[in-house]
Image (tube, rainbow, N blue to C red; front, top):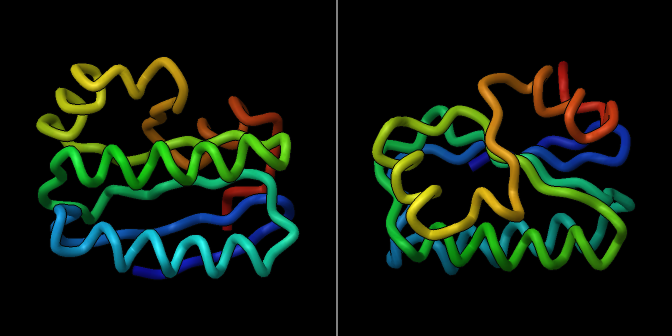
Length: 116
């Protein structure tokens, strides 16, 4: 996992499997980085995630709540077909937007500075 900051946005680039074995460790790293930053928004780049289960959904929801407390938003970029299915079934799409690119997410979030 790699965390990048730009403007008021923290971007988490996550790879591999996002399951119950890894979700807690990822959550702790993201919370530590977000808490130390002045960021309001969080973007999850899932383009390198190969598998996600409900633990991944829970991790995203928890980070959404942290961003919301700061008046920010969350977005997801790069989900594969199975992740998109889980995203829709879980109802996550009602609170966290999904976008095809970082530029698209940036526009939807009001130009929060996501691109390189």
